[in-house]
Length: 232
Image (tube, rainbow, N blue to C red):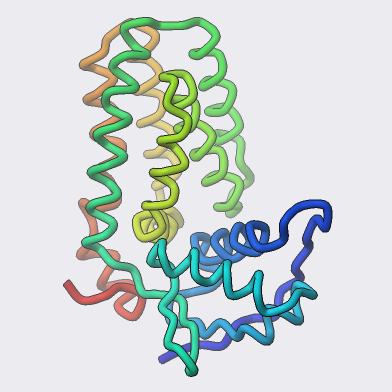
């Protein structure tokens, strides 16, 4: 059953193009599950919230549709999509392929500045306030983004992010489980340790274990949130 859009404050920087800002805001709400699957997005409500005409709202929703995060029914409604496990598996395959090569290279080269940078982000993640999944997840993103930047492929981070909406939502469903935060930190620690000791294959193995966690418990997630996922 579809749920209605919550009215939330929209804050736009009028010195920048507004459509990308609306896109960023709505994407963040969808990925954080603030806007749950099956939520109806009213274009008129969004125009009123952000104080804009229909064009930037339409453009933002079109981009979200291309990313598979909303379904647009012309002359009817726009609805936040249910989670597509098949799309999540493909996004995982893409991310794993890129990050395996990145961590192997970074472990072989072992830069002190890189290790210091990821340790700093890991410390932020470790000290994220209890219950603040947003802060914890944001630090997780910064941690992994460092691999792409340090490997010289920053544009691929943006590509992965655009393809990862479904798996990101699965991760957010998984994150509140007891012990999940601690497991993520342990996996990050193991990855950093392998890079520090210049162990490319150890780093690759640690990354593979880390990125496989969510997809390995799909059946459990589906049982807890049956209305959130598309049937396979």
